[in-house]
Length: 520
Image (tube, rainbow, N blue to C red; front, side):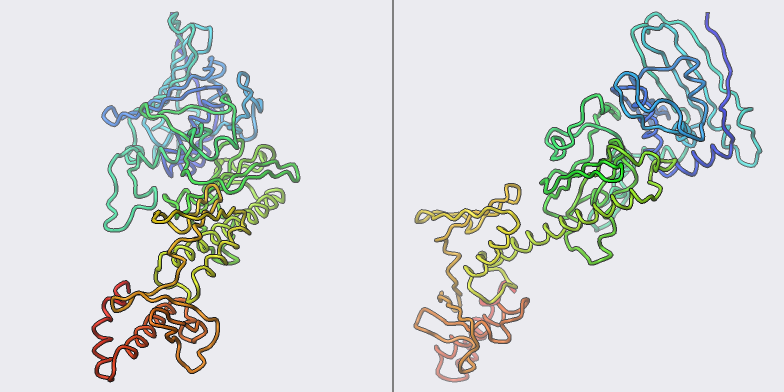
């Protein structure tokens, strides 16, 4: 025989508005995060989130321990302080929820909430209806305890082996509907670099993936280092699509641990060796017990000096012990404290060091590539010398340099830099190491001399096929235009050698100028 019951939320309406409407109405993903967190604390291994725009509802089903009527009444109590045991009964997980306010997060997104739940080895099923819309009637002074939460408890032998909680959001509000739209906002001609350029539904999934204790993809550079046990993680599906931790791939360039003032943490820094998109993936994500806390942080290192490649850095900082008492009510930030400040100062140094490392490696790579491929804006100096200087810089950064000889006629790059393996392969007899210049249909060898021109001439012929270039000629010192000025001087030297009159020189220069400077 079904048993009807009626209960109340035991919390003041002003607290409902403060904690639910103001704190969580930024985006539906924050509310769904709280529902998954509650499931995690109930030892759920799996959560299914089914979004049905046509039916105008969202169903959140978890395989957690479920609730008895006593548990349900406790669920409706909004505490002002830490409550319950710190670890879960089945998986011994560290609980995410501390104050019991997470349940309120879904109230602004629907008109009514239905909860159906049962515990393991029990045929008793509890089903309750909560009129969420009644908690936000404008212009009326409503005592929250006067809004009834009605329900029924009944027996269902088919549920005896099951344990679950299903929460259904009926009558989605306009805010909720906007959050699950699949429409992509117009961005015009600019490139999409932020999650705000995605459809709201894709953004919602990304935000869940950035906050929840989800598994990493097997290919993730973080997977092996953090290596959480399966029971410490939770599987989440959105419309049957599995969610994994946000991961940009790339190379793991630094890992480490931290243990000071009762705070223990692990960190890993990664780079894809290019500017990271979406931009929300840049910098370091803080996690407390593997759960995201707020937006990613660069620890304000740019206040000291700008880092050109800071946008190439992404990382994870997992706080595994300490700072639980410093978490804010909404779990989106920490309350400032000396232990937190010390941790931030440590990560400031880590991020600064890795941003500098990426910058140095990339500058050496670009310089080597410019010279061996004869690109513009390269230094007026011997290619072998420039490459050798930058190979030394890479060796100082932990790279191994392997020098080999190629077979006659073999193709391939003169220098190959594998940043993942920190390995540089140099083909010493590659033609690219021979400095040449092609002008007027002829190729000339170039020999550089680190001195000022003896007679004011920046370049002179040593023989019919070879030029000597004095690299200290003032115009050649320009990093941006040195190669351009060198080419002009060589063209003039060839014109002077090939022509007898000023008129002929003028015609010669005009004739060969387009081909000589076509790459400019």
